Length: 248
Image (tube, rainbow, N blue to C red):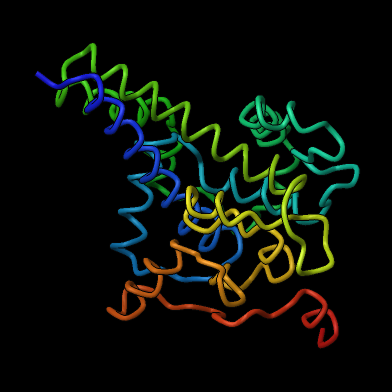
């Protein structure tokens, strides 16, 4: 019989799996095209995102792209500068869902991500994915500890995703001139996403660590996949937004 501590560890582990899929697949691959994944790896990420979060990738990408288009100004879906730190930290998921379902954002910011047959049949049914994920935990650990693991997973996943937006635009270093912040402690917990100032400076760069002492664990997986010809990196070294503007 699993112990309570095992259930908590399992919940934290599944949350970390979800966070790794979020940064590598939803963020760097789908939203910014910073990395291209092979079809088998893409399918694996789609399944894991479905089971651990129920997120529709095109909705996530559209909301995130809008965040870049209106960073910390009117129109930003989840700016603590506009809405306050605690509202973003505590209600980030609700803010995301409101914008994702407004009938405009996905159409405007995810035109290149139309739903395919698998989306319509499987992956667009987020609650089904979450239900199957919960069922796997209950089957493996029993209903009581499975529910505890699921609660830990959901709480940890939502809190850390919210922290990227809340802390990432309120507290931390700013090596580049933009309103985002770097927090290495958060980067350790979110596979690199805490290096948020770096990301806003060079959003199409696959590697979020730009200088010595910065660590981007998500990059380790991308580099391993690329070494096995399972991923192709668009840009490893930073290409700053100002540099892109200057040559466009």
